[in-house]
Length: 162
Image 1 (cartoon, one colour):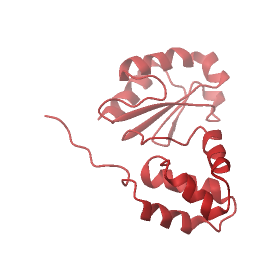
Image 2 (cartoon, helix red, strand yellow):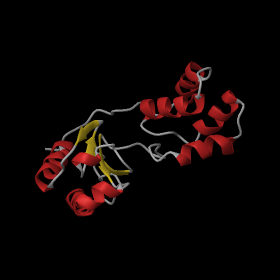
Image 3 (tube, helix red, strand yellow):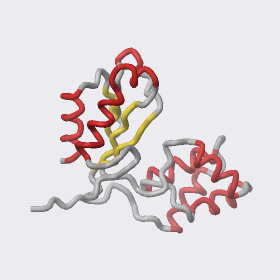
Image 4 (tube, helix red, strand yellow):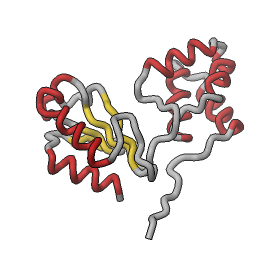
């Protein structure tokens, strides 16, 4: 029996996108705030939203695109139902992070930055979670995990695949 998952995000809708943009356009640092709000609603920042943001903030498309591409957390396409982020910073690498990243890729059948074929899990690199003293570390759906080892990683992968 194949499990059916309810969508975690709204499907892209230009009218809804315009509402989100208008809701945040007057805030300080509106570009980042809007991009985060769009991604929270749709699971990614739709390409069609970039000119809408630019127009609302009186910026060029290039300026908005520059912000979008500068920050690694913004996505070009929706993430899976669960997002597993593995720290790739130096402290985590020195504590065995490379081997854990390779293990996660093998268990999920995707490379870092990829989403499983069933859209359950997106595996992403992240460059420092601020848990250097408990390296290696990870984050599953916003929950921080330190002192990651093979057993804990396997449990996270299993949890994300449910």
